[in-house]
Length: 222
Length: 296
Image (cartoon, rainbow over all chains, first blue to last red; front, side, top):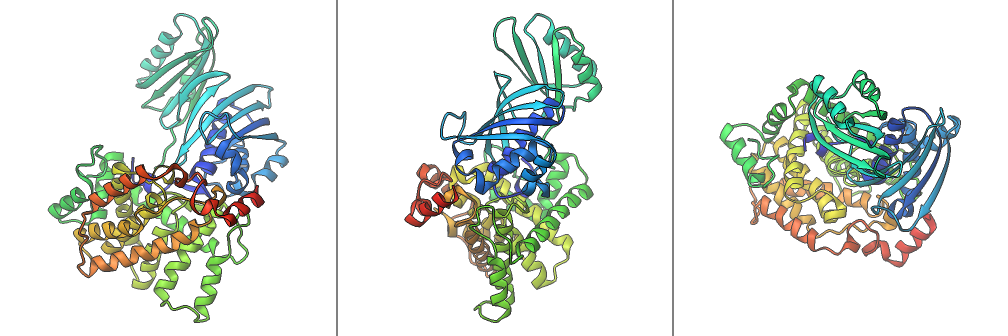
């Protein structure tokens, strides 16, 4: 916690959880997909669904998918901008069934046809937790530098990733492994103290068994 | 040690005051130097970042004064302008300072509801209180901008103590945790801006928080509009009342840290229907429910 958590963030209102937090979850989709989003199916749950219109949650989600920051004045007109940008979206509202009262699912398609499914929750003050990625249960917040490695569940991948980070003098703060089934798709989520630059993630992407390595820059409140 | 980022809360407001007194510096200076160390950033960079926030506050208030401003739901907007008009026409029983305080708090809050750019302080729902107090004092007393930027470090320091020992989230502690905390943060910093001692600041913090203890978060239709905007106005007014009492040498019988503790106890005991869920209080009055149905 620092002074800018108390005097900040600078954001577009009205709600840190229902507007800024929703935007940040959708922003994760844009970052992880790594390309322009052209189509998105969004399901809003419980409190997100009930207060969507008044909190501008729908606009915030679209703004996030377009890569806007939480203090971008264009959030207010994000629905119009999304249409202009050719982002086809569909919103579904559900009274229950979410992982948290303020949660949403997004299934997005990028311009190259790449598909990503993500479930996230807005847990207060603009903080978020990502709970599901491509059907695999995960848990990360994006508050630290985060490296997400999608790979095949097989021996040696973890050691290879850790080896590259070690050579680049990047300290791993936390590390979690998730998999769908033995030998199936797996996801490694690493939080690091130092930023992971693109060259490093490209090297990791070349490791045998790795399908994708994505870097999420730490959410900095300063 | 600056007493603001210790997990056990043993340092709290009392620790902050003791440390400032021992070093013979203001609370804002104490917090700023602590952050220079903790964040490994220079004084200039931190001041610049805070100055940017003060600027966003100013712009947010300006935007909130638009007579045609309306929130997405259509529930709020234009009231800051109404207050300003009435003030200019001499219809209010308020001097320039108190009217300005109310107008600014309302404007910032309405700008937030209208998806304008704001500084959460500590939250978006309570974003009108601190800017209203600081910018009104700045204007009334010709306080240099540099000192107001410093005061924001004081504001943040008090907020960090409250967040550490209790909560600043309405979903966890009700409105007392949002508007109550903002009120306490603003009152404490106002005392410093007006030449009071760190000890007086802590009393202002305690008195201010006490005035809003028990306040529930019962927003109509779950939106940050009704009653939030008007509660920001009363929060700003209460902050100045508390600061004035403290400047007169009035002490809070219950020390600030214990008031913060009480706020947490009250928040923990508060029914979930009164913590930002729109399931109790004003939200479920016949009118509140009718408004909610119309918006949906």
